[in-house]
Length: 319
Image 1 (spheres, one colour):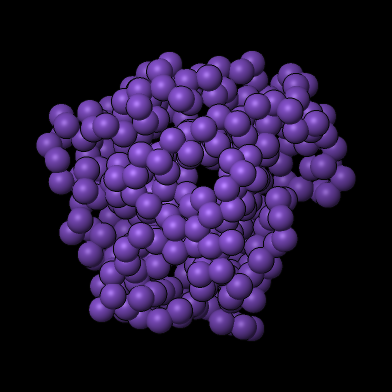
Image 2: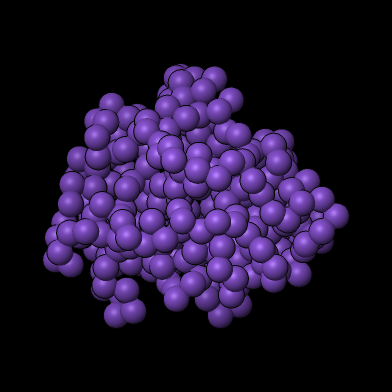
């Protein structure tokens, strides 16, 4: 069924459902162990391996694994989830699958993922940006250090990525870590003016389809004069939001839901337009390319351009 995605700082009901659902998905009761992930990677000749302790994983951990896996599959431009046209539709499919899992554990087929309008917070002073309600015990916990308060304080990081080798590591469970606003490269969140820049791009994407192009997708992903927008939020939060295992932090989904909302705003203005089309542009990024999925049916960009069968947003910008 189609849910409504709302601002987490506006709807306490959606906030509470989101946090309850995330904690429930993080229970290590999937029946899948580290050894099963290793066998899956090996049997499918995938360019990723896993080391570390053999422990039972959660459904939430499988979403973390899925993100790292897509990042590890190189394409002629970027990888199977980033740095090319596929960035927005792949993450839309990914969010839909998480939303469906949350609907199941909550017993609410109308639940919609909340978003965090980080550009609104980007208009605050530097000192206030990491002290909003979002980073309190009523919401997602501490902005800096270990998350030890609030509904997701008991969530545990079990999969991390080795920065040197790129390997996935099954590690002793630990709390989520953050370092909001402490990276010297990024002291502030994106601004509303930067969102407007993404919205006024006339083209979804164009050749050479990579991190250098000026397009809606690439401005929103954050490579242009980066890190900006999506990329900037990852760097600003830091900690577990930095590596390929960034979905370990539920803030990942609040960020990407807002990114998806901005893309939906852009389509309200420009139509449900996607480039590259069929038989042109980089393989894996075309409108009919099958996107990498390990949870649920694999979809193409064309299949997710209109998400109304799954969800709508509480408000959208119409030209």
